[in-house]
Length: 301
Image 1 (spheres, rainbow, N blue to C red):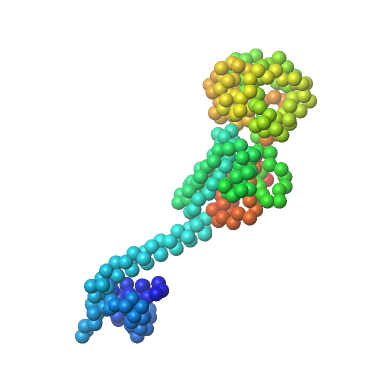
Image 2 (cartoon, rainbow, N blue to C red):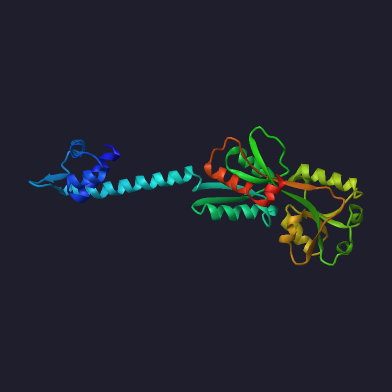
């Protein structure tokens, strides 16, 4: 039994007339009659009662007509769903991002544009560290991720630079350091720091320590460790000390915290959209293409 048998049967069954069904299907009436005879032979029962003039659905034929309509509708819907996936209009896209990059700029802009342009697609967002994202992308758990400090080349991964952010200082509002017109690293020698533990990001930790040392902050006075930026901001807001954060923290920092650039701290944070080179998802391609069109990304590239 093939789908054409069901289409032919439904057309005849709805009209109970071979001639009109043949005209609607644009096939010869004799060919249509032969196909229905083949279908009845395969089923083992008559679908139509033959009358002196025309045909009438048999009792079994009426029941089969309902099921045949449903089957053809399901096939049509399945084909439409698959076509939307093939065109990148639906399906599931799993995207990772670092929480501190999601408050302003490319990350929220790209999510908003995706939802606007692909309303039928499912966007699964996964907040996680850059290292966790890279592991998820390599293993296939993520389709793409917004990753900080991505190496320039990788045999498995492709990337698109999307933003250049910077490390800045979070300080309690009214803190003496907030009144310094051009803050430098050596001005922070006596400041108590809320710092992140090295295990959270060894390469970034070592790079930050090196930059501080180069600028005269050779032994930061660390009074408390905090595993993420949100905790650092919370502790800073309660006056425990100052802390290093992504400059984008100004878009979500507590009311009692100010974000201050440090003039001689050379700590750019390149943010890249990363995905596997062998990921052929049409939805992923659309997402990457949409991100490329964001003005901030075009300016960077």
